[in-house]
Structures are given as structure tokens and as C-alpha cells.
Length: 179
Image (cartoon, rainbow, N blue to C red):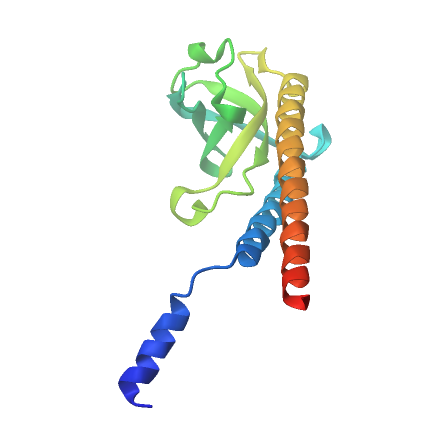
């Protein structure tokens, strides 16, 4: 066997088509990964464990349809981005201006993969502006719990379907090759 034949054999093995069992295995593994991400992301701190922030607004971005809502606030810990959950703009946020003082209770965005470049990012659980409660912890808690429950339901369906499909394909393969 020459070098050309060996190279052709290696390339052919690398480009071999994926089997149905492998595809269902990957589908199941993605479902398991989604469940793990859900467990990390759905584990929100209690109100006592949230981070208090007292600072001055340096940028205001009130979202709309398909656009995020966030504040950049300068505090004792530096200037960071504080986003509302799911980009929701809450009544009263439109009155906030650059230079205004605000008080927040926040949770760190644990899934921010660009933290090194974009800086630390947080989610707002409570927002007080001019002694007025703009965002209430209980409202955010209800919103997050509803969204997490919906996501969990879809992930569980995905897990069940992918596991069943994997089982059927595995049994089929064993039956075909045992005959």
C-alpha cells in the first residue's frame, strides 16, 4: 500500500457518514447539556443573596420589540452593565437619565462568555429610582419562575424523546446485527 492509498483511506474514514445511532446519541447528549445549562441558569439566589449596587447611571438603553433594556451604572465596583430580565422595559424606567442615582439588587450573569472583553454583566432583580420602586423583586421572581418552568418543560420533552429515540435505534441495531 502506497502513501497515496494510505492518505485516501484516512480521508475516506474521516468523511464517513454518521450513523443513525451516532446521530441519536448526539441528539441525546445535546439534551443532557441543555438540562445542565438549565440547572446552572435556573438556580437564582434568594433576595438576601443578591448584590446591592448604589451608583450613578452612565448610559440608559430602553429596549422595545426585540431590543434589550439595560443601564450602565458607575458604582464603588466600577462601571458595569445591568440588564432587565428578557429585555423587558418596566414602567418608570423611561424617566431615568444619565447622571441619576439608582439603587439595585442584582445577580451576576453567570453565562457571560465575553466577560473578559465586555466586562461584568448583571441582571436587575430590584430597581429603586428617586425613592420609587420601579422593578420589584416579586415581579421578577414570578417572571423568571414562569420562563424557567416553560424552558424546563421543553427540555424534559427533548430529553424524553431523544432517550426514547436512542433506545429504539439501539435495540434496532442490536436486533439487526444479532440475526
